[in-house]
Length: 484
Image (spheres, rainbow, N blue to C red):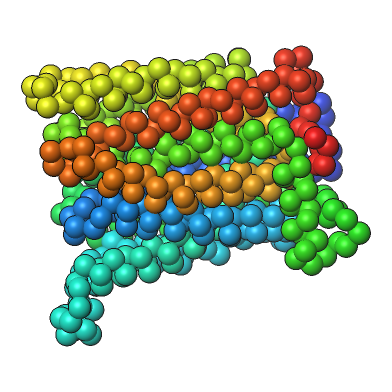
């Protein structure tokens, strides 16, 4: 496949001096590489806005209509991760082995994008649609809350189905089109752009989350459609070698694919440490659904203040990401990630103490402590963010990168599928320890600390195994399938 003049061209060979500008059969000029970065980063900016909208705003909607916490966890975490567990491995396995005139990643991205945008917009208007169904089609019979939850649930499932085609494949594209010599710097820029998008959303848009929900969902969807459409049109993939043979004698069919996937991904303890470490840390994500509820109900800050603090943290993180990426390059992403986990374990008890002491702390002091804890956690979280994806690219086999990422997503999603519901049930259960039901949100950092400790254990085991495989000497090679 030949590239465009804006990105790259496929060439049969290249001089040693030009090898840094190549990836596979793609060869870039300096201007072409810059243009590639622009398209990818602009796509990422709008992608991040789109991905920020649902988890930021939907918890407020669920809380406003009186839905219990377990329903929030079920719809926003458990169901999406159940879908991810079933669908992601299939998409990733097929993407790694697809050979088409448009490449192996872009067909999945472009095909799902229009449908994703439609259901994102419908999700933004789910509440008025549910009211119309309840009043006009059901004649006011039954529970309006139930109707609203069903409508939101249907739109969420449809949105997540098409979004899986994007989120499963999008990050694999970078490994295929960005030269390895520039990959770490690109990932730092990628994180910076994503952080900037999140900061702008929190600082300028989030305050309107309850009053202009539909408009926010619609505009973010349109921006995403335009940006991703242009990115898929202008970014070109190169030629790929034939896909590797399947495990066993049979070279086609579902069972042969399944056997290959299982043997290659799950037959070495190194990958199990990798998967379980990432799953344990991801279990802290489910509590993020309740972050805004913790801030507004326990710390007693307004939505505007919450958005401003989050936006300011995002801007500072934006400035720290590139040096954090340099630290990861210097000391290896796995080492930096392990250190960041240990530091987060040290900080978590401070948050627990603050939330349980909130009733005795004046509002002005509480706000200062809230900002201080956010500032303390910021550089630690930035180190983690800057190291995570480079760690994936350093440790996993390049030719099967999508496949191993999907295996990681599968194990992580199994955990999140249970964790999303379990976290909500945990918070509902601890309501008995508070004077009001909302005081259950004091226990959010308790949940986080538990899973941070688990992550620390598995990352330590992963680090030990990595050293055994030659990590310290710079001779690391990803372990082969079937060899424990």
